[in-house]
Image (cartoon, rainbow, N blue to C red):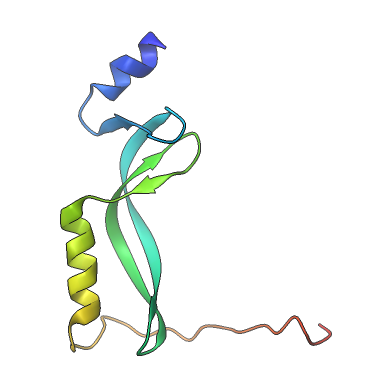
Length: 91
């Protein structure tokens, strides 16, 4: 436990609110529902991710940036074609 507390006090590390494990800062991808196109994919989103359970959390500033990007009428950086599989059909 002392090792966990030692790491949690280091820059870039915090403690997970769900399991108590160590979190570190990472850039993640995030897919969110978007009425315009079905989903919007955000790459390189700064987050704290638990190394034990995978719980991911974002700062208020990051959340605001994501929401602002979704509200803008500008074009995305890229558009991807996503394959769709129908499990009601025999595959």
